[in-house]
Image 1 (tube, helix red, strand yellow):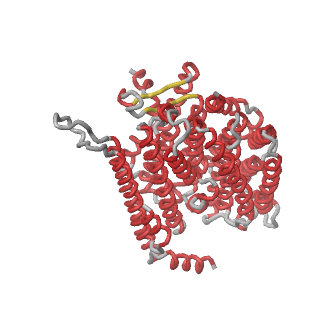
Image 2 (cartoon, rainbow over the protein chains, first blue to last red; image 1 turned 120 degrees about the vertical axis):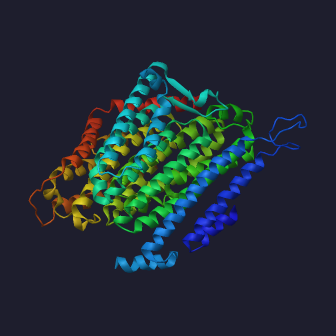
Image 3 (cartoon, rainbow over the protein chains, first blue to last red; image 1 turned 135 degrees about the vertical axis):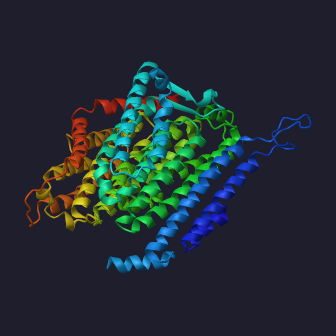
Length: 104
Length: 498
């Protein structure tokens, strides 16, 4: 999680930022799934063998969150593509330089 | 037959725009997407009015999806807190959609207008979901739908200025971090209580009456996530570029409603759920929200003075205005919360009107509106300019406008809490607002260049004037806004005093 956040903050490349965001979100998904584990629990399927079940609800929530995450990454990548088409670079420093030049 | 639909009105106000948005994405006509949106939003308004009628009878509606009883199912809750906001939302969305047609035709390719209105309705539906939902995870989903829809809408501004892409990208990254923080908080809350329903959460949290570190961590994560989304001061950096490079119609919608709905949920979470831990709450309000609001008011106003680009100026003034709202919410009493809601209503109208007028100027001028470009506009386009003047005076808080009512209530709330320093600061920043607004007025009416008046487009100035007249009407006859705000505060604060 911290790794993902670190990538977002430090990297100068927009593509890397999107990847960092994906890592950050995935870490949170894993955190959610780990909440669901019940000691000695099995998958929540009705059988006579089991005496404890893991909680299925966080998995369902995360299924939703994964969809949201995919949409976010897809939109992020689409924006990076458009930025590349408009500026011919996706490095933050170079774009700042270009903008400074065009403002003058 | 019609009654069946009315029973499902709480769900329909959200589902209807979402459903229609999926359909109109495939229409590539100049006018049809707009007509369909208008019809949808008229229905939306009708449903909201129906909800108002029901609320005035019963006082509370809990709508359970698929008849799953809470706490298992997702539910929507409509009560005195959000009915006023729902109504404002419905009306303002209709007006701004009416306004948006000519703006969209000028700013984006007409073949894209189906897609643009599809995103528009997506944003409308999901923002409405934020107002109604009673489930903390469901909120995250709506938060992200609305964020993704508004990011795409902001990126549509790239046809005008490529910086819109950078603004949209920054909003995406910062917004997604905020939303993910919120989800971490939800995870902590769920781990400790096993529930996501807000009413049930209150009950379940009560068993940890002395408080647990995990819960406080979760609460902090949730609040920080929402603060990012609501653009509260130190985490507001995504807002000014996003508002100023978006197409004008989009800035209108976002500035007037997007942050407001999230602020509403923020205050609801504070006063309805986290109220269980009064010591935590007052710690957060007194030492985090209160100083940050003061900083937001002061810094937002000062930065606005130095802006040359009018849309950026308005965006920074939004930061300051959000500061006024959070300042009122940090007061922990009835009048404070009520004055916060008054300002939510009034500021939505004021900023909406201002962005509408400036958006029209941007089209007339065919470039970004800077201070210099406004020279002589007061004579050239008198109808729109006069509306801009009234909205601006209301932003400063002159009597006879609804901005005055906001300021009056805020001063009253601060005075009863004996916060004289804040009163002074609010007064100073109102005076500073005169400075940045005067710069606009000076360029528009007092520059050497004189133009003859030109014809203005009734389709555009009509909605602007609807908003402007409502500003004056609510400035003189402010009872409805104050009643709705008091109602909201009644519901929220009653929990605090018990």
